[in-house]
Length: 370
Ligand SMILES: NC(=O)c1ccc[n+]([C@@H]2O[C@H](COP(=O)([O-])OP(=O)(O)OC[C@H]3O[C@@H](n4cnc5c(N)ncnc54)[C@H](O)[C@@H]3O)[C@@H](O)[C@H]2O)c1
Image 1 (cartoon, rainbow, N blue to C red):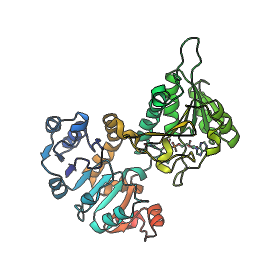
Image 2 (tube, protein in one colour; image 1 turned 120 degrees about the vertical axis):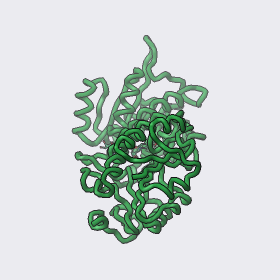
Image 3 (cartoon, rainbow, N blue to C red; image 1 turned 90 degrees about the vertical axis):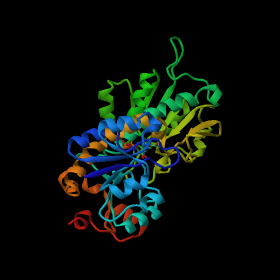
Image 4 (cartoon, helix red, strand yellow; image 1 turned 135 degrees about the horizontal axis):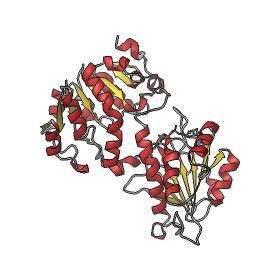
């Protein structure tokens, strides 16, 4: 099979769908890989490295869309990309179709097969191709908080870890899932006093055991959140209710009780944010201030560390890419949890939540590929 890797065209997107090691793996399985010129240049992956791994370099994206059976990307296809798709071709990438009617229409009209990273599940019901980006965002959230706390950034001037004889900062993490645990681990490593709030008692027990009590755990209620806000130097918003908008756990009125120059990092901003005063920001202008509290609400945090994010993502996607290349669409039924990834096939919408969000007819994935 011919597998194509176009250069990402979304603004400030430097990640790439396959690194050279992934190309080599596919070539070892007898496949051919076509990589667009400079696809990995922004993160130090040269065309030479891809050629050494066995790839052919294409001068244009059109060559990839025309020649390849399977196209592997990172971000959802932009208009010029989904207009290049054709019947029988497979696209494997993040899609996030629910709020994006134009892209959904484009994919349906193309007749192609579109498989979304974000709806593939693992045996435990987790989301294995979302988790790597949550790990990155969780770890980054503490770097962001530490930076925002500096005086020059408008922060209170507190060092997360303190120094001997001086109090460390208090970091509160709301939501102890993948983002929350990674945030807490980083904050703990820097010497902060860390508290995680969650509603899942099993998860709190797990965190307590794994960290041997060094991370304080609290059941998440209005009351525990309010008390934490009063003492926190940094609060990380990391909640998720799958399929729903994030609950607003911190109201504007709460900000008055917080320390001046403290920081709210709303990682859940991609689900609408879990603080009432959150609005999405970019890496170019990541923060703003409300009632003397700094807000960091970047919706695409992993994009800032595109090299690490590329390897984290492709470590997780590669087994699925290899399965698709080896077996074609049969991989969807052979690999456990792969089928829920199918969002669009031959003009049919096969992801139920997307169909209901957009009021469109839904065809079960297993019927569509029969
Ligand atoms: N901004 C970014 O760049 C970026 C990157 C990756 C992930 N995210 C987002 O971060 C959020 C968290 O992702 P995740 O992978 O950690 O999800 P997850 O499912 O692993 O964890 C979410 C946790 O929130 C907890 N929770 C739910 N309601 C709660 C409440 N009221 N109080 C306290 N805890 C509550 C759940 O029990 C769960 O443990 C998601 O919205 C995700 O989309 C954002």
